[in-house]
Length: 157
Image (tube, rainbow, N blue to C red; front, side):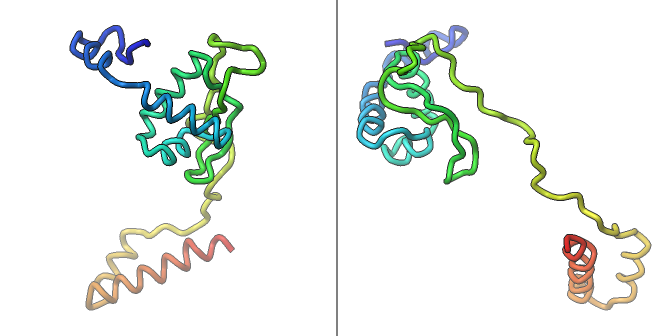
């Protein structure tokens, strides 16, 4: 079984990696996918009580060994992120161990999560004048919160 250390890592890392019992996690992952069907790393890690990073590394290795395969990418109900979904067994398309994993989109999305805001900014003179007018921090905070609602929240309507 290959070790999980980079070629540039010191010899102590290679020794430690060689001692890791990956068979335990491999068995649990294979067993879960076999019994429950396709799942992403997050779900598998929750169900077999392992760290996500442990499951992710194991799934990548099991894919290379053609013991599991990716069936696509789906949005995770738990996190909302796109995640690779794995299934038990070799890839039915016959891609084999040289098959490349699907690329997961990172970075900005095309969709806008927050619409363009149309609001009036607070000017330093305006804030100074209100601070001088109001007698306490509580009054200023109340005024500021009301103004924020007027300027930002109501601009969405």
